[in-house]
Length: 116
Length: 112
Image (cartoon, rainbow over all chains, first blue to last red; front, side):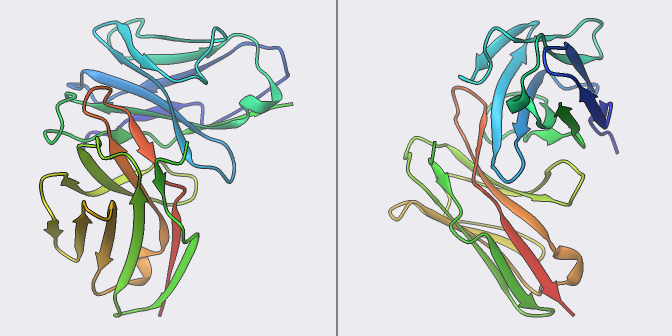
C-alpha cells in the first residue's frame, strides 16, 4: 500500500541553524501539507501546497519557513534559522485532491525536530 | 484556536465493551469531519469520516455520529479491542482551505 515517507526520523540542531525536512508524498497525490505537533499540544496546520505554489499558510508559517517541491517527488520544509520553540514533531501529508468528501489526507510518520 | 475540542484527555474501557470518544466544534462552516488514530512515534492514520450533511457513518466496528444542532460528533468503537489503544484525534475540514483543524486528542486504553 502506498504511503507517505519522511526523512530524517529525528533531527537535532543548534538554535539559529537551518534545517530541511524531507517528505515523499504518495505518487499520484496532488496536494501536499505540513503540520506540526509540539509535545503535549494539538496537531497544527502549517502550510498547503498545490501546483508548485502555496495554497494556504497559517500564522505560524512566517518568513523563516519555506516549502519546495524540487523534483516532482520530494516535498521539503525548510526552517532558515531555527528557534527553541520550533522543537516539535513535523508531519507531512498528501491527498489526491482537495474536494470535500472525495479524498482524505494521508500522513507520514513524522520528523522529530529538537532545537538546542 | 479552539474550534475543535476533545474535552476528555483519556478514556479507559474493558475489552469487548463500547468505547465512545467525543468531539465538539464551534464553526458551523466545517464541511467534513474525520477521525484519526495515532500510535506513539507514528503519524496519524485515517480511520473514518463523515460529511456535514449526514448524521451517521459506519465502517465495521467504527461508527461516527454527527449532531449538527449541538455541534457535536462522537466515535463509537464496538467491540473495543486492546489493539485499539491509541490516541484518537477528531479533525474538521474547511472546504475552501483544505486544511485540517485538529482537536487535542483522547488517549484510549482498552484493557484485556
